[in-house]
Image (tube, rainbow over all chains, first blue to last red; front, side):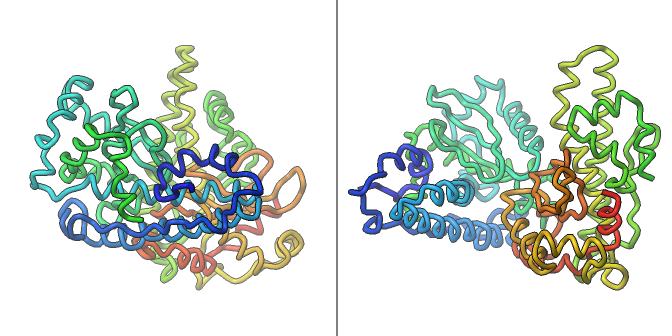
Length: 243
Length: 236
């Protein structure tokens, strides 16, 4: 039976999966589709103040993230029905919707985890010994890395995300992604920053440079270290738990 | 007014063409009153007060949107044009080409917002209601009815993944009206003449509507300036 319990796997293997599933012997109607649910935040809505307001956090988590999950679940149900009825056109038409909403779920779930209250032990780069020493050897210093990362974030045209990723080779790289495109496939997302306007607008208005400057005060370096040292699937652990 | 666009130097017009926006610059009919002074883009004045679109769009949104966001596109466009002109004078075409994404983004942002402000009006003045005359006839022919058109445009707006715009356009090749969406600040170009644009970036509604963007897409019909849309349609 196909394991649909992991949206990351699902997005990564979706295309080959479909061809493997074609044929009359496949009975999709018996296949259960996992329903994704909103993961709890590991801190209170006001825990990231004054850098991210409680109002932003509450809307962002309880409304925006929830909407991605609701639409993802809907799209996955329709997709199973489209497989059951051998409707390839409907399956293809659903792919961008699954990518957008599944990506929105993945990205936000990773984002909440890689934030922590300012001043906490987790929010100190000393909680990421290995990662920071790799960053220092690649960028020269943590400050130079932060400068590069911040510039990448501010260079995003429209909605999107900035990520520090670990390539399969182990090399670190800064990437930006548009809209809700997720980091799926080979790269491991180490830390992500949401650059959609809804992530900062109520507090920072058009001053997104100030948001980018302040986000560094609430980065959870302990989680970043864990993702850096862990296996590829470990970074997506919270998503499995949220099923 | 729009003809002042043509006063830009040949180099600048070339830059516009390189970014695919040439058709707008060469067709003043579709162009808003974007003014260029000595080849510089400048922020156009609004023809109404920031608070004039309330309660449908708050004065605070309008002020930030015009004074800050639009201004940033104007500044970015001028900076991109300067970089291109400088690169051109040195024969550094690689450098000039590298600025294309910034020219498209900021140039598009300037054009889109200039068109947007003009296709809005206070509900107490020209804003809202329904189009009449030839525009109304074409909408009925191409969409079935005004209500069907409105519904389709709202569906297009709701379907934008990320930041972008939805436009009612006239397709000059077929002569029909169509709905198109554009990502980020990509301008409407080619055979499409933009008639009516609605900004679906979060900064256009978030302070008032937060995550309830469907409410913004409903409310904005109360402040659509059909007189402007009809004038663009007649010239297209």
